[in-house]
Image (cartoon, rainbow, N blue to C red; front, side):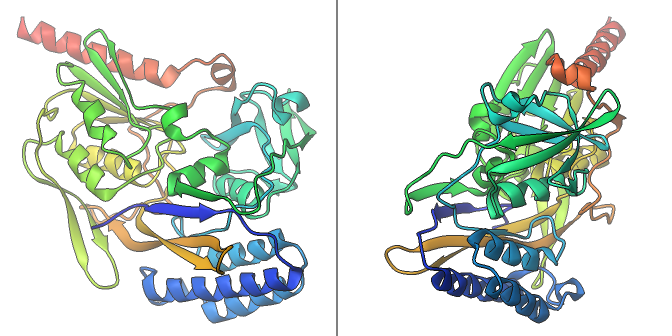
Length: 417
């Protein structure tokens, strides 16, 4: 069974001596290299010399007394593969700084998309819609912003973050002092890859912040699918069975399980259709959509996407484009299109440390021969909210989708009459 992500058991990092921390970090690095050599989709490691990368990581681990920098060395080692789904998942640390804002690309510009009331970000004067050009001296652009957040919030969390933004066309620097809740040194937790990625964004669990949702706008049904990791995707879609036109909102959807995607896509076909081929070391496996009921194959459809539509949601959007089943509207997607698996690892005995590696085990090749890794899906119709729209909580892309579908429903009714 293919999966875009699996569930992660995680624990906080137990307190340890510097020597013990170095020993633990080196052991982690060796184990992760072993996992990569056995499971990464390309046995040639994309030309990366993992042995040298491991030697470099060990040297950096030996040269520091800070656990965060040790984890940073491991993260850098894994990052040499430059693969969207290959990432070091470090142990949770006891102090978890929270700055209280989210940001993401809107076109080529990275903007603040959410501010928590009473947070460090709000106190410093950061505002929704602000253009962010740097974090701690590192350029914040579409290609690197997510990993930058991952590094400073998860791998090597810092209690102070320097934000460079643009106000009235002029650069301005803000210093954010994080709120730092402290957890017990050893605390057992169960979390998923998606929870981990939500921690990178400082988001609530996606089910809370952006729940599965069905609404009706006249003849148009609206279905929000925040993840393909749950069977709720299907049950929510089925609520729209009487809609004469349909919007599927995949904005912020970071992916999910292959089998959920297969079933979901089946509702949009009257015949069996290939979604993509999963090409791994051992085999090539076709991922197929089989017709399901209620069927939406002849219902006018718009799929909403944005810069944080990733993995399974990108695959669905591209599938809809290639089959001509609907229109994709929004921003260019993340370009994280592959099949991945999470490999949990553990070091120590009572207390122990849980960590792991998510890595690509197969490339996703579409029927037209394309591989959208690092490319993403270009919408049929671009829609990028402005800073003003964000600050006023407007949704011009949803409005555009509703206008298009209502016109199609009206034309169809006129032709029938």
